[in-house]
Each structure stands twice: as structure tokens, then as C-alpha cells.
Amino acid sequence: MVDIAERPTRLARPPTVPPATADRATPGRASRLLGIGAKVVHRSVAVAALAAIWEGAPRLGLVDRVFLPPLSEVLVAWWELLRSGQLAEHVGASLTRSLAGLGLAVLTAIPLGLLIGWYRPLAELLSPLLEVFRNTAALALLPVFVLILGLGETSKIALVLYACSWPILLNTIAGVKGVDPLLIRSARSMGLNHLRLFQKVILPAAVPTIFTGVRLAGAYSILVLVAAEMVGAKAGLGYLINYAQYNFAIADMYSGIITISAIGLVVNQLLVALERRFSTWRVDVTAG
Image (cartoon, rainbow, N blue to C red):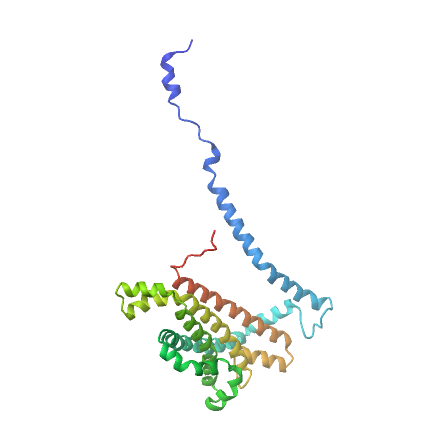
């Protein structure tokens, strides 16, 4: 016979919590880490394959290792250049020139692009001139810059400025012209003046297109400069590559090429991060 006084005590016992509930956070964290690791591996497969081919092809005799040394030998030469201080000197000279030209292009091309994109009479006035110069390659004008400005730093920075201005200018014009007219009408109906209209509507809508031009200009600033440094320069990555080729230091030549690729990658990632900083209002439709 069951004692009635014991029933409330038995009924008052809390239900047993399944132990799996407390451990749900751990599998979720582990799955996220596995997802990040899988993404890193997926993005590194092509680079790893290229490195393996570069290392194996000369050693297997598929290519002449005199003209294409194994990647390990190139990395050893790169380390020797870095340890001796030569690489830092050449990288510093190239970065100073390219960043100066890119910075001047940003400061001049973006305001001009905003004006041309917004004011139709100015666009109609300058369009023929823009069409002439946009189709003129920067390297084709290298002798002109050298003749007018000499072989010093001024001609190289001016060449980078010229090469970087066009992608920034044209993308800024396209960004301003691509703003939804409905947004502009809505802003004007709310009483915004021209300055506030630019600040609140035009610039935020044009930022993604402008940064596309800046990223293109960042690549141009390095490529054009390297070509310019092969003519009449005493320092820089272009000079390093050209000097190594003439002296048949092939590993040093490839070391300079790898350094240029690494700098271009870093500059592009920095510009992407800067674009995200100025485009925090955008929604990523591919997320999830």
C-alpha cells in the first residue's frame, strides 16, 4: 500500500534534462570551424597545384631548370634578397611611387567623375576629350613622360597617375549615372539641397562602382610602374627584374615577380576591406 504523504514529493521532482541539450553548442562551433577550414582548403587548391607543378616540372626535366628553376630555389633566392635588405629597398621604392600615383588619382579622378556624371553640359563638353585619352595606352606615353619630366621620380609617378585616373574616373561617372532616378526624385521631394543629395543619395549609391575602379587602378599602379622602372630606374621591382635578367640571375628575377604578385594581392584585399567599411549599408544577397 502506497503512502499518500509521499505522492507530492514524488510529483515535485523536476523532469530529467537530456544531456544532449547542454552539448549542442560544441557541435555547432566544430561545424563552423570545419566549414572555415574547408573553405580555406578549397581556395588554396589551385595555388597548391601551381606550386607543385612549378616544383616538379623542372626536377622531372619537363622544362629547362636553367630558365625555370624549381620553386624551392626561387624561395631560397627570395629569402637571400630579403635578408640582405635588397628586396626591402626595391619594394619601398616601388610602393612609394605606386601609392603616390594612386593617391593622386583618387584625389583628382573621383571629384572630376562626380562632376562629369552629375552635370550633363560638362559631360558633353569633355566626352570627346575623354574618348581620345581613354583609348591611349599609358605605356605608349612613357617616352613622352620621360622627355617632358625626365628620368626621375616625377615621370614615374605621373605615369602611374595617368594610368590609374581612367578606371577611377570612368567608374565614378558610371556610378553616378547609374543611380536610380526614383531615389533622386524622392530625395528632392523631401527638400534635400544639392550638397545633401550628394551626401545622402549619390555617393552611397555610387560607392560600389567607384571602388571597382579604385581596385582596377590599384592593379594598374603596380603593373605600369614595373614597366616604367625597367627604363631609367636605379631601384624598384621593375629594375630588380630587369637587372636580374641581364645578369642571368633567373631565381632573383622570379623572386621579383612573386613579390609583385604578393603586393598586388595584399593591395586588392586592403581595398576590398575598405570598400566593405564604406558599404556597410549594403545587404549581401548571396549570404546564407
